Length: 434
Image (tube, rainbow, N blue to C red; front, side, top):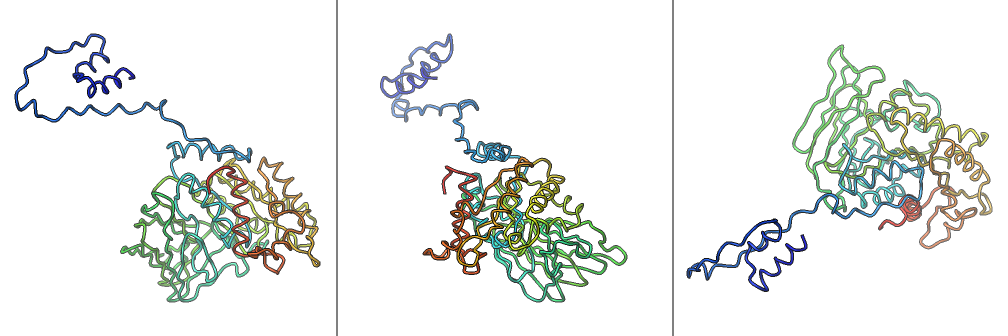
C-alpha cells in the first residue's frame, strides 16, 4: 500500500506511468512500450489516479469506549458502545425511568435523556401520556380540548383500583364526547434526527367505543363492534407512520374508549428514555397495578435499563423504613419478569427540609433501605441527597441564586431539577460531552 502511494506521488513528480503502479502491486506486471503521442493525446488532461481502496474493518479506528462509572450497568454500557461503533440492535436502546413527581416533571430526566441522545442519537421522546391537562414533556407539546376522565382518580394509590389495568404508565384516560388531544414532537437538536416518526397508540375499547386517529393527512377509525368489545386485561396497540413534523390527534367518537398513552420513536438508531412518573407515587404504587398486564407491557417495550427513583414521599410516611427497600426489590423483580435480567439503577430520595432548616432524618433511613435493596439486586445505587450536598442541602438550595429549591421543602425549581439532572448524568456518563 505504501509503495502504491509513493508511485501515485511519482505520477506528478516524475511522470510515472500508471503501469508502474501496477508493477508495484503485481508480482510480474510489465510496463508497455512507449507509444508516440498524437496532438490530441498531448493536450488531454492528466489521468486522475483512482481513490485508495476503503479501509478494512480492522483498520477502522474504534470509537472511544464510554466510561463506566457504574459497573453494575455493564450490559447497558456495552449496548451504548455497540451503537457508537455502528452496530445497533434491532431497535432503539430504551430506558424505563419509574418515579414520582420529580420524574413526571421531566426537567431532571430530560437532562439525562439529552446526554444519552447526544452520545448515540435521538430515537424519539418515547412514552407520552394523553389527555392530562397538567402533563408536560420536554420533547413534545400537547393540545387538549374537551373533557378527559382519569383513572385512577388518585394515581399514586398503593392499593388495587378497579381492574388494575393501567398499561405501561399507571394511568388511563377516558375522552368524553367531543374531546380531543393533539401531540406534536418538538424538533430535536441531535444531528440526523429529522426522521419519520413511528407512533404506537396504547388503548382499550369496550363495546360501543370508538376514536378517530389522525397522523398527518391520514385518518383511521378504531372501533369495537356490537358484541365484540375489548374486555379483560389485554391492552391493544395500533401503529401509525408519519413525517418528522406530523402530529398525532385522537378524537372521541363514541362510547368510553380508554387511552393508556402513546409511544413515539424516530426511524433511526439511538436512545429513547421513557419517563413514567406519577405525582405522589411511592415504589409501592406500580405494585398495585394488575401484575400480568404490566409485565406484558414491559415485555413489549423491551427496555435495556431500568431506573427506579422513588423515596421523597416515603420520607413523609410513618411506616418502618425497611419496607421501602422491599418495595424496590419487588418492583425491580416485576420489571425483570417482563424485560429479563436488565441492569438497574436505583436513585435514593433527594434531601428534604425539616423545620429549622436541617434535613428530615427519614431521608437517610429511606436511602439506606433502598441502597441495601439495590446491592442485593445487583443494581447500581446513587444518593440524590449526597449529589445535592448532603444533609441540610435542600435549605441551602433555597437561598442560592438562581434559586434551586422551592420553599415547600420537597420540590426543586426548574433550575434545580436541571442541576440535579446534570449531576445524575455525570454519575452515569462521566467524561462525556455536555
